[in-house]
Each structure stands twice: as C-alpha cells, then as structure tokens.
Length: 219
Ligand code: C5P
Image 1 (cartoon, rainbow, N blue to C red):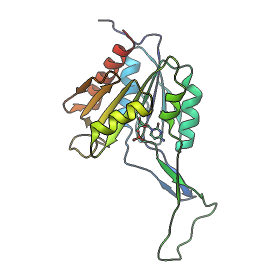
Image 2 (image 1 turned 180 degrees about the vertical axis):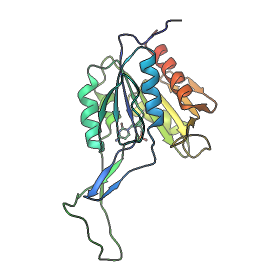
Image 3 (image 1 turned 45 degrees about the vertical axis):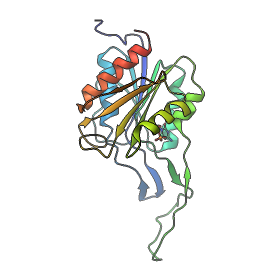
Image 4 (image 1 turned 90 degrees about the vertical axis):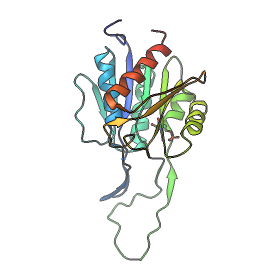
C-alpha cells in the first residue's frame, strides 16, 4: 500500500453552511457544522494531496497544511470554487449550500411593524451543476443529504449534475448528518454500484470516500 496515494494531486473540498443576508443583522443558514468536509480535507492532506478547503462559517479549526478560502454566501462559494476548478484533480462538494437567497437585501435593519413579514426568495446558482457542466479531467463527488427516498434522490443527483460519485446520507437518522460526529453514508457510482456503510466516525467515513475516489482515479 502506498503511503501517500494522493501525492501530486489537487483536491478541493467545500464544507459548512452558507449565510444568506437579509439585512445588516439577519441571515438565513442551515444546521451544517462543517465536520464532514473538514474531515475529508484533513484525510486528503494526510494521504498526500494538495488540499484547498472552501468553507462557509464554522467553529472548526482548519486542518494543518490545508489552503483555506473562507466564504460566507452561496454566491461567494460559487465564485471561489469555480475560480479554483480548472487546477483541481478532485472536487468533493460537502457544503450545505443555501438553495434560496433573499431577493432583496435591505440596506438598513428591517423594522418591526406589521404582524407578518413576507420574504421573497430566489434560487441560488447550483455550484455542483456548474462544475458538472464544465467538467474536463476532474473527478466530481457530490453529497445528497435527504430526509426521505435517499437512494432515488441520490441517483437523480448523480445523473443530473454529471457526477462521478454521490455520497448519500439520511440526515433524519440518529448518528448521521448535521452536527453529529458520526455519519452513515452510502456511496453510489455512475456504473450503478452502491456501497452502504455502517455508522462511522466522520474521519473513518472520510477515508472510505477517499478510497473510492482513488479507485475512480485508477490508483
Ligand atoms: O440538489 P442538492 O442541493 O440537494 O444537492 C446537494 C449537493 O449539491 C451537495 O454536494 C451540495 O454541496 C451541492 N450544491 C451546490 N450548490 C448549490 C446547492 C447544492 O454545489 N447551490
């Protein structure tokens, strides 16, 4: 077994949530802790890769030797990720990117007045979709965090976003998904092969994901 199988390879990982601003004091976000993405970045580094971590706001410490791009909004994550894309060999999109963002960002704090406040949201640009459309030599891995019909949605994402592999996890299950230190994942590849794994620490899950990536790279 080679000690640093990713030596000379560039791996970009996105992690964490995004924040979508509404006014100077308020934003929309989600429960992503960033733990899974940081674990992948750390494991890839240990396996010899040159790692870039594009991360939304988290409370985690950046793994040693990893190049970090800090971003806040989905738009910023889109721009940063695409700017690095052509140089990468592998991209693993673990971030929980906001699907919708406010149409209007108020310049001043929105004052309390009426009993209801209707906020209009518009779709964000799907980063993974954009990467899939522009794919050249890269291995592209996406995540599918679902609360129902995991396999169906995961397979749909694999095809629709032109991925090489999708990592599905049921975020409604105990010991899996957001904030947890463990994850129960299933890896699905383009050839239709499925690899379900038991509940593992996010570090162990990260190694499993990278092992599959190595296989996809023919290493
Ligand atoms: O379709 P859905 O958003 O559930 O797909 C999840 C996958 O797509 C994740 O890998 C996530 O990082 C990525 N994604 C993205 N840009 C978005 C939304 C999701 O890259 N705007």
